[in-house]
Amino acid sequence: SLGLKPDLALEIFNISRKADVDILIEEFSPIQTDVTYSLFEVALSAKHRLFSRNHNIEFRYSYSSYTATLGSFVFPGTTSLYPAFSDKYFIGNNFQIKYDYQFQYPYKHSEINPIQTAVELKYNHELNKYNPDGSYSLEDGILVPEYKDYSLHRFELNTKYGFQTFDNHSLTTRLRAGTILGPTVPDFFDFYVAGLIGIKAYPFYSMSGNEALWINLTYRFPLITNIDARFGHLYLDKIFLSVFGDVANAWNGKEVKLNQFKRGAGAELRFALNSFYLFPTSVFVNASYGFDKFDRTTRRDEVVSYGGEWKFYGGILFGFDI
Image (cartoon, one colour):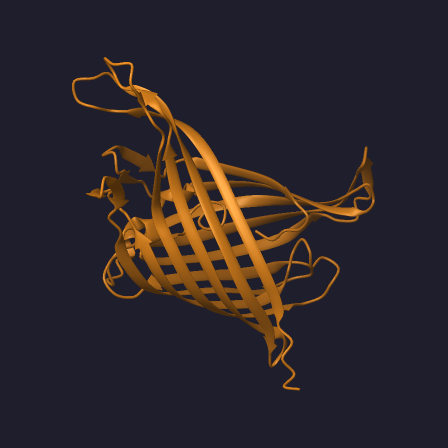
């Protein structure tokens, strides 16, 4: 009777990856074994329209459990088999409120060259237990992880605004900003602003921090339309080209240092196809160049250099959502 008819969703994810590792113990040569990472998450959400069908609000709760399992190995100089060991290094409870507004101007090229306005605002309250150092204590003969509590308040804003310049040409601006309130927390909780979903001129893990900002400007226009060509099961309709520029950075601390922001630019080709005259098939290729060079030190004290090189991407999707 209140007119509340939310969309309810239950989502369950589990991702596992296995990698070979060397265990380093003083006075012994490296011991070869493997480690399996298992990321598990279950989420419950309720989404409802707000004011009109373009406005939506979503409430979400998710529980996460991340585990690393070290494989068994024979200890050097003995015949003793060291058993496999499981390390649950993260337990997370996340409460999220998300508001989003979506409007897309309808016209014949709206799939490949959308002219739209989009706003997404998220607030997350996270109650996490994390073992950042892999520390354990012995209790009643059992190893117990020494968790640290991280209670976070996280805000994130994503906006997109596009408008038509000439016939079938568009100019689109995008902005992403994020902040974690309070003192600096470990990089495990960082925002990431690089890679395919951010400033493409730099690898995904090159930029991360408790604070983040990414600004993008893209100009897109048609190269060829009404192609009407068939290649086997593929039907090619149109090709669009875009040129773009990015400015982004992620950092810790509340001070914004403009001279530390990274700049990138590039171009992207989009091909609008159909497979078997039925399935939409969207193909893109992207080339991006990073103008600013910088170094980053990893946890293993390795120095990695970024920038001053080309990055290339490509993909096949049902739509141009990235």
